[in-house]
Length: 449
Image (cartoon, rainbow, N blue to C red; front, side):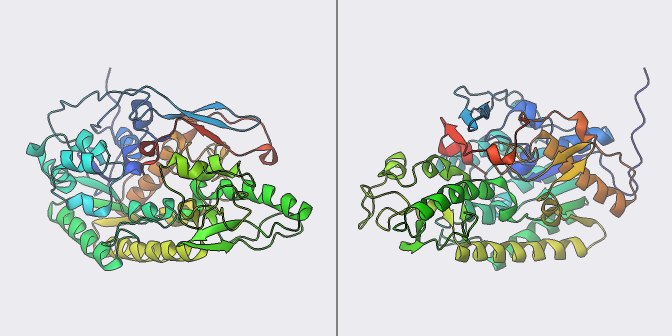
């Protein structure tokens, strides 16, 4: 049988497609890296559309670590980490992988030549060793990418340079102090270093920018549920002044609740805080015992959690208004650098993921399916609240393909998103019946980004 003719790619040559990035590029999904999700990584989907060979560091299901799985949806979603671990499937592949997305990678990691096995140990992140494997291929992600003599590169990096700060509630960072997002000047220097090396290698490059943290379910799921609890409690008990939370070690009251019972909070609560939201108003030290932390001076865990200034919502579980502003400023700066790079040469083009994801807030129809940024029901993001589902990856792949077509005169067909399996079941329930998710068997590794 005659093989189908590859589509015209204009002045872009996708024969050797290489993808550089982090978990979003790797095809990491539902808190893990596993084959049945990796096969739908956006890079692999693009390669399939142009019939190019594309090697990935495949891991057998249920992945490393065991993926998050939806065990029940009603009355509350029950999400459980699979207790078994997958195994690498093609670690003996004779060249660097085409997919060089490493979950947890920041921009600095792209050029860093530190021993990647040591880095995996130091950062409790197995993916550096899993993806890079052999220093004979190159000691850095960039070196391994260039060793493949790429004809075309996708570069989507920098998310973790702000996301690490945001997901920690502003308590950790990637700058020199370890407390803030990567410094803007450092980001600009490193990004230019990477893109200039790719340009010198003769590859055409499509870069993608960084989405707003406020557009992912990791930050938009728990807050409304907490508000729904907070409002009735405040109306029934005037002694409850609001939800108290820590802000850089200080105790702050959340403020008032309007007549509809919705909190007037300019704060975002992390998805990882969901086990503690159910304990609001109860005497509890669960957050401290779960994390092996001695309660700080002045904390009295016999007081009602979150409703009393002596037992406030922990700083690590909330992104307050100032922290949101810090994250927003970093994203704006990083995206300005990425845009300047995309505009610097006809060999570069930009996928504006930041603007694109905002289109899903109220729902967006694609190939007969409705997608939104709602947790689980929205189909776009998986159970960790940050990473796209398989269908979400197909949507991202199509945005890259559209840019390749418009910028380089290609005629690559789009992926039919409805032909890609959904990662989580969508039940026919109303959002009003959607209660706080319960996570079981989740460890720190599950929430690598």
